[in-house]
Image 1: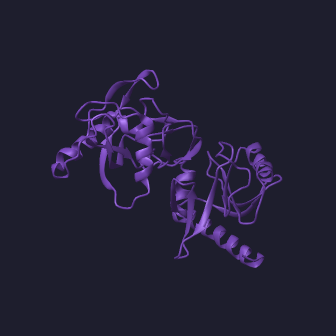
Image 2 (image 1 turned 90 degrees about the vertical axis):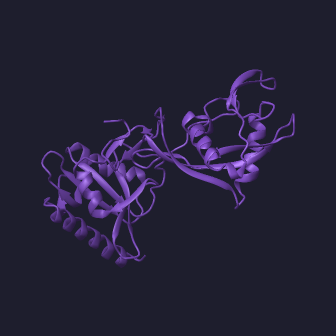
Image 3 (image 1 turned 45 degrees about the vertical axis):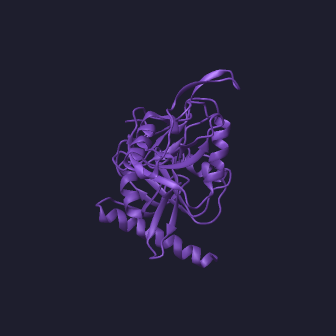
Amino acid sequence: MDNNQDVRKHDRIQREIVSAFRNIGVEAKQEYAGKGWRADVYVPNNDQPTAFEIQLSPQSLLRTIERQSKYIRDGIIGCWLFENPVTKLTEERPDLPLFYVEDTKDSNLIVNLGDRRKVDLQIFLENFVSNHIQFKPVVKTKTKQLVNLVFYEMECWTCHEKNHVFYVDTPFYSACNAKIRPEEALWESNKMELRPEIIELAQKFIESRKDLDLKLGEIKMRYSHAVGKFYLSFGCYKCDSLFGDFHVMEAKIDIMYETNKLTYQGEIELKEDIELPIPHWCFPDNKQFCDGK
C-alpha cells in the first residue's frame, strides 16, 4: 500500500470511528490535540476519556510505549488500532490496549482481538468505552465445552486383543474464546482424556453406537513397573494390562494425520475450572470475565 492509500485509509477509519460513536450517542472528536499528544479520535466520555490511535505504518514497540505514556500521564486511556503486528510485542499488556483493524471483503471494518475473536468496529468501540473489554492476567475455562473425541485401535501387548482408546482433538475455551490446553506430561494423571467429564462422554458414545463394537477398557490407577509408580491410565478391556503412556502416544501420533478417523462431538460441563496465566484483553460474550468478576 502506497502512502496516499495509507492516508485515505487512515482518514476513512477516523471517520468511521467518529460515525460509530455518534450512532450510539457518544461524543467523539477527530484530530484532537492535548499536551504533547494528538489523538486520531478523542472520546471525552467523562469517567473514562479515551484516545484512539490508528497506526497503519510500522511503529516500534518502544515508540508506541513512549506515545502511550503521555496518555497515561493525563489520565486518558490510549487504545491503539494497528494494521500489522508490532515487533517485539510478545504478549498483551495492561498499559497498552492494542488491537488490529482489518477490512472485510465487503469493505467493512472489523477489529481482531488476537486469535480469540473478530468483531465489527462499532461493536468493539461500544464495548471498549463501556468497560466491557478488560485486561485480565489469566484465562479460565467456561463451564460448557464442545469437545471432539477421536477413537483409535490399540492391540494389548499381553493378550493381543484389539482395544480402543481415544484422545481429545479440540482445546477447551475460555468465556472470551481463548484456547486453553493444560500442561500435560507422560505418566501423570492430568491429561484431558482422563478427566471424568471426558470419560463420561466417551462412554456415552460407545453405548449409543454398539454397532461399532468399541472395546474401551476401564480407565483407572494402575502400577507401571517401567516408571515405578501408579498413574491413571488406559488398559485392556479383557486382561486389564496397563497401556503405557508412551505407547498410547505413539499410536495417537500414527492416527492424527489420517483423514478417515472415527470421531464424536459432544458437549460437556466441566466439574472444575482450568486456569492458566495468560495475560489478555478479555471480551466475553456474556460479560463474565475470565477472573470471574
